[in-house]
Image 1 (cartoon, protein in one colour):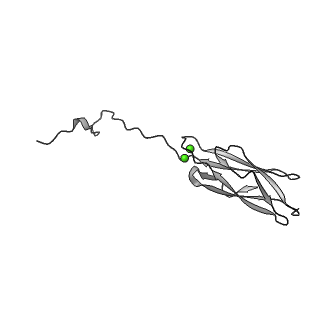
Image 2 (cartoon, protein in one colour):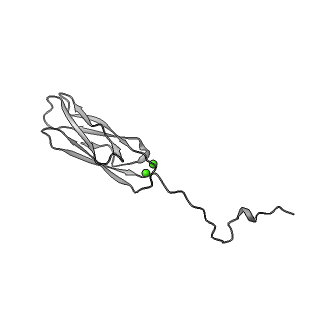
Image 3 (cartoon, helix red, strand yellow):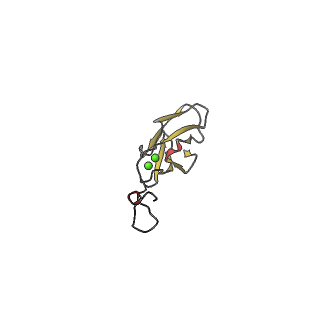
Length: 120
Ligand SMILES: [Ca+2]
Ligand SMILES: [Ca+2]
């Protein structure tokens, strides 16, 4: 199982992933997908690799919140009966920043509205 990219911005929307199986491609294989942090990214609960097919794509939906935070990794794990579990991670890059405070430190160069005067 792997994801198409290593990192994505929160507002990237979706990231493609691929879940694949080796050797045996006979029979439908139901793969369970788990996100370790659904506040960062969500995946379908299951994807099915059809009979005769080695791999299928799935969509990881990146969650765009309004929280100011560090970039964080979300780990997606794929599990299926009789198969070795696989996982991949995506670095979700925060795109929220605190509002920039504008402060008058008293130095010249910062005009305060209260000091404006009409020209004589
Ligand atoms: Ca955001
Ligand atoms: Ca955020």
